[in-house]
Image 1 (spheres, rainbow, N blue to C red):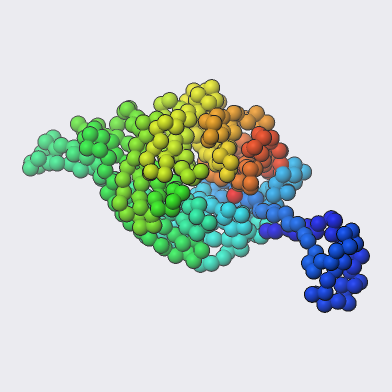
Image 2: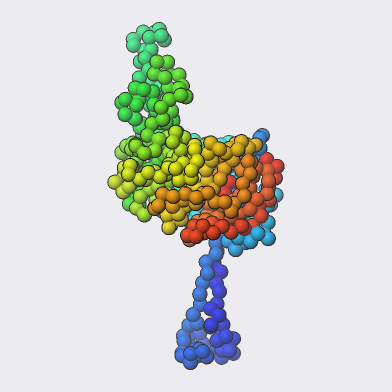
Length: 460
């Protein structure tokens, strides 16, 4: 959406010469009364405005579970910053097709919403909408199902390639057991767990499948002998060169003696699967020595390209979440140590969702060991972080409540150096807040009207 504003210095010229212009052809010169100079075209300035789409997750059976579906509602960026404006998606919004919480993405300018339904009869269906304001989201293009490739509950993300491509992933696992040539199960020996990943890329413009590949992705022989395997993958991210795709991974473990699940185990260094792009071939696994734990994230994009490198959050790190760095050589930069516990002076930091602006400063949602237990999970907070200085500051100008659960948070809007976010406890009203990342200034924006048990999952 674009609004055009006439330059005030030329506005008088427009009025004074209006009569002359009606009698002249469009190519006739115009005399600027301020300068006396001849102009063939009146100068004008343009200010870009964009849509801000707010998403709410409706309660299913329990407060904050988000299983009742997703509703979206869009306003202008000006209205999003206006605290006198009220936004009520639960009563007036557009229902994004999905059996449970929809997995939403937006174009970089906010004019288009991309959705892939999650679970149910329509699970895996890709749809695209033009944002028209309010509850009006007009279907555009054709639908396509990625369910045959990655199932009806796909984990997908929009790559940062100019709104051209989406990527969805899955992993399936199977324990390999050696029966040692006998029928006696007590003689069976656990060998390893095979993790087979599937990756599909989707043409977002033409609604078509671009590429699909499956791979068995092993860990090291020692790790596999100890029962470790890749159990979940998510958040594909394209590198700066556009020739590699990074996929975040979660590790699980079995007891090799019994092949039973082991929940009390040593957390290994954070890992990422690297594929050639766009072929999706030649999988390798890279490992961090700085961060430990998972890199697959949950609902929100977990890694971003900035200044030639990819910066990635990890979760479940015994030393608190880190932001890790993968350099142009497609390996972790283990000299880059950005620990959120140290930066914020807390313990047990867990990054829930984050998003940097082009200046390397980001808004980050997190919880920690000191978070209060709310109606649907641990209380969440926002911080302003700087990837260049490896610093973080809690944003105190946003109100917090023990029921402010950000576990399912999905989206931020980046508009220049400003980042838009939603703040509302489960079942309570809240507001949009806009963080100017250069200065840290926080603007309280439009009111968010909530309903019992529901919550807001971000802006798009």
